[in-house]
Length: 73
Image (cartoon, rainbow, N blue to C red; front, side):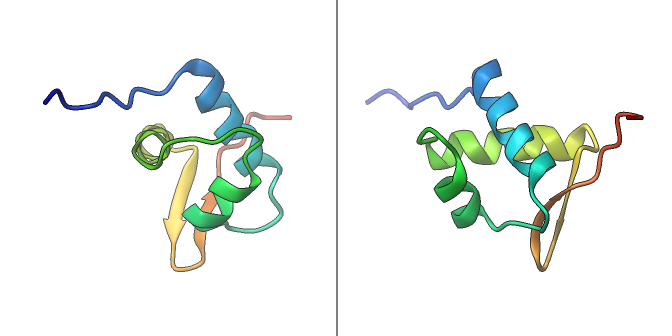
């Protein structure tokens, strides 16, 4: 049996980024999944969140995931 690949598309990354950027509070993973306009596989979402954390756009806390990147606007 072949392992399933969970590489996110650019559209998925942008969809998650926009949700977190526009959120007024930290969200847990279940809340992120519920609020996304399209379903995203759990492991794909975790990959996106890892990427966003590595690029210093989000941070994880006890409250959940929060946007922290400032684009200067």
